[in-house]
Image 1 (cartoon, rainbow, N blue to C red):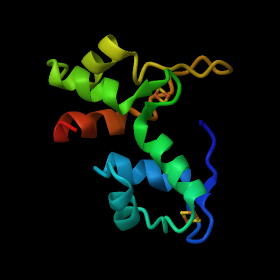
Image 2 (cartoon, rainbow, N blue to C red):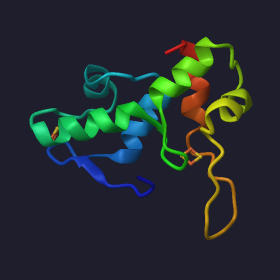
Image 3 (spheres, rainbow, N blue to C red):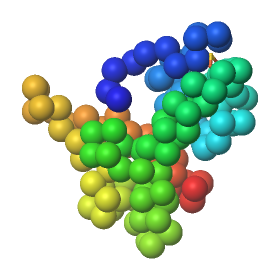
Length: 114
Ligand code: FES
Ligand code: FES
């Protein structure tokens, strides 16, 4: 899910806004309603929101659960979480550059422990 797109069409909330809210600590649909402005009026978006909430690193396909577990097991820096789970270590295939897009979220998970 690398590209941005509108997820909640009623309130015009896009994927990046949702990721931003997650990076600021949103972990549930209720928190996305509050912090990203999604409406949750349709079932379709709800399942999409669940999938977005459950994922931390799209590049390496690392789930929130995996990152939370790594943090609980002592990974207390973004680098250590990357070593254990692979999250945050994605590389853009075309440019060869590090992606790093999910690092802010990983740091937030470390900060909040969830
Ligand atoms: S359009 Fe807002 S949740 Fe579906
Ligand atoms: S989304 Fe995690 S490294 Fe790209």
